[in-house]
Length: 229
Image 1 (spheres, rainbow, N blue to C red):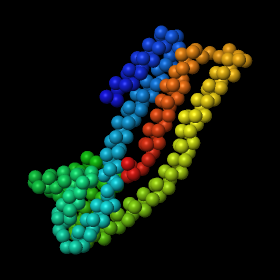
Image 2: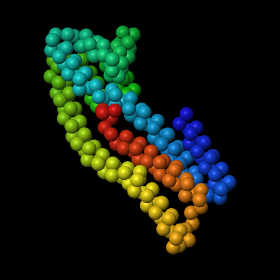
Image 3: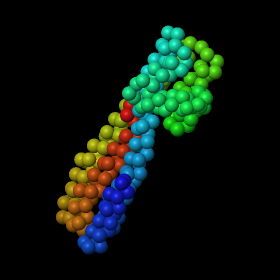
């Protein structure tokens, strides 16, 4: 689906360029940007799914720590996590089904880590495997939860600083750059010969600039920490 709209824009831009003798690059640039945005969005969708799992790791680790400290067995504590409605609970249900089907606990956990492909989730899984093999209380999981929370605070501060810069660029692309382009057309047409056809003058502010805005918005989304999605 993400290839259909870019293809339509590319073919439409090519048709406009041929019919109205407009600049080819200007005419097809929205299609090119839409293609890049579509591929980018597909990647962001995958990142978002992983982020929904990562967002629950501190709570899950703390919950399992309390379950272990209350005297529950390791598997009982895992089943407690699997009772939730979030993505991590859903993944734990897959793990429990694999264990109930005859797989060993370490193997089922390792398979889950390979599927999710998240560094934070892998740390969580590795801690669970160590607890299962060597036993212990919930202190290690409690420490993991606190460490992740502290690391996320740092990441959020970094992102907030970058977000200000991205906002300024977005404002420039949304208002300042189009206004400067229109001023260039008006003033330039009075005092010099400018190589911009009427159709180019229409396409650039109506298609090119919005496409650039969309590309920047997707870039901002990609820089957002996964756990806040």
